[in-house]
Image 1 (tube, rainbow, N blue to C red):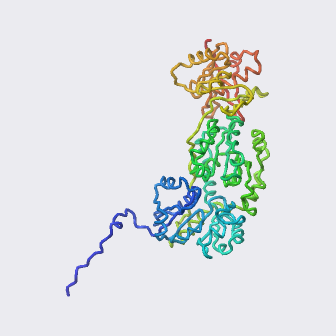
Image 2 (tube, rainbow, N blue to C red):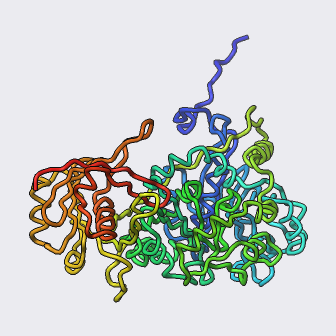
Image 3 (cartoon, helix red, strand yellow):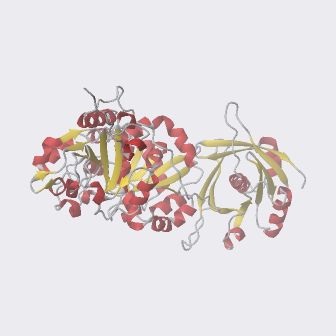
Length: 568
């Protein structure tokens, strides 16, 4: 018997083009806003491609806060499907960190998760009523009597009780998964110094200003607070960073945000981009001035000093932990003395005051990745990794617009301990007449015509410049004879000082044993010498400086400066 030759199946082109084996399961990430997209990345990072899982993304249309979302996804260099194409293809699972009834069109079981610290905000436009928080409403979760999501992730059991009241048919589908975003924050705590270095905080204390979106937010209630913070807090003691909810950026556009905050940015405000960096900034911070947004809640969970400038209670579910947080957390009076309020808040800080409220929102701490990974792998029919997913540290913040003020209003003076306290507050042009607290100190970068003419101290900001330092200080003193002190930097830790009358001193920062080489800010040094001189005009500043040096105090830091005399 003759056997016919076996004809091999011809492989398709797509099979031959695969470098790695074809995926065993396809997962669709569904996003509606930038907030939900960044949260979704935390979750889908738990799915390993080596386990045969392929992930694609799509934008569920309809959100008024979707501006910039397509560009953000494109920047991830991942597979992005148009919504019309995504709903025609079958997937083994779809995951979304937001919910909308239109997601019923996806051909896959749907897992929905919160895109903040639990479910708290009342958004009538999304929920159709004034009692159901967004994410737990019947309008979002059901379509024609059927619950749309296969599973509804909650960060704490408390949310299941509220879900049972707002949408009873959906309650059996609730799954306690913790908060993967907060778990990543906690895993990143050892990198606090790295984040502070990236922000340029140095030894200063960092105030993080957080505003969610809407007219009841911090910026909605106190639009001038960012500018007041950076102009009223001493710049050598405090750094200020602003974290704005992504919806603020989407609605007002990035250019609009930067334009509205331009004066504050010029005075030193750091504005953290909406895509990433806010978590690292919270870790780096010492205080948070916020509202009813998740950043304020997470900060309290990290035992940071939190003050609320707005509570948003009118748009929060009264039964939610967020509402309890708003009723309990300490307040900031936006019109009061900001410097004194921060100092008092630090002295009166009680870390356990908000602990019970925070615990009712953030459950399963440290286990969110393990819970979600195990549930998703089981749903896909795959064996979970032998070691559960460990939260990755969050990326360091990047602040694209960072400015150093060129004019300061300086106060302070000698203290009983022998140090000279210096408090420098940035001066911003265009704010109308404002009486100076002390004297003006300016740098050579100041372009305002009047500030150098009314200053008592001037410093150069460039080391390697066209004019030698001695020539520059001489010419500056001749051009502006009213100056008491003129300073030019020689290196990071050295400066050339010219006092009124022509005396030249070379200053260098003393480095205590076992410490990094200190930076000697030329304008700070000039300000300290002027305060020292003004306190006792009859003294010989040159002789005293050479004999004993000067100890400059900014907040809790003390910088020791030694001097050598030069020729007049």
